[in-house]
Length: 316
Image (cartoon, rainbow, N blue to C red; front, side, top):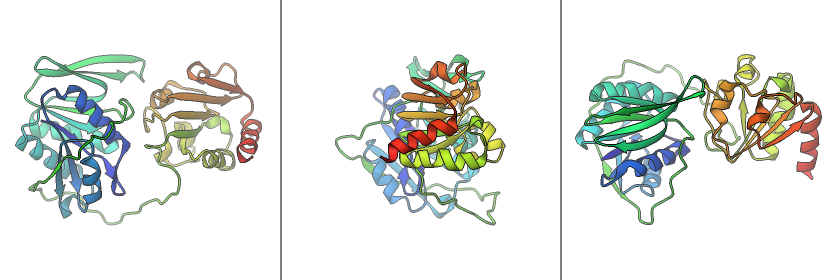
């Protein structure tokens, strides 16, 4: 069995889960692919998952209502053991990178982290991943009864739905007592498009000028394009935008159809988070900015002049 651990939020699968299924199908061979859905009251997520694989395993328990790395690790390791999984695929998100090593330890299995390519090799699996800020591509491999792999978001195309829905099975997992308690939880509400699932991303860099200009230029442009908002680390460190919008090596990895980089110079750290974008459009007043080397279209000009002109045309 190839076990895919679903990433989901707000009652639906996240885009990265579809990407994991693509990776699973590519290496499955004669082994069945199963999606594991963890949480509580996840009927809609499970129903969506049945469109992607023949088997959907649902561990719906109150103890899994909130994400806890030690509980997730216990649940995934238990299901992988019971199902005799040969491969466990986890999204290389912030939480996935947190609990996947714990899963590997519980299974006494090798861990291939943040991979961008995966294939079967003999009795094991071989993969590729980026290192040194995406300047080097490493080839890594592991041969063991079970291998745990975390996949870099955006590395694979999202999987298409199957013609027939798969079967859904309930599983009961014995969970340890959580060593973490939550005293308060706050959820940021937003009507904007999610950065993880967006087809268009408008990202702003330090060249925008200030937090006020970010609000008056980047946000209206993103709204006009029905796009998600992204930012560089410099912008986030300056407090202009929240960390959740950071794109790059220490932020999120995105792969939209269109990536509009506004006032972004194109440091390697940022490029590693958006270099899977299908089409890159750059606006920068410095004609020698590195971003133009990766851009499909480039506009040399002052952000304060170019963006209002774009907005005027879009509103027409």
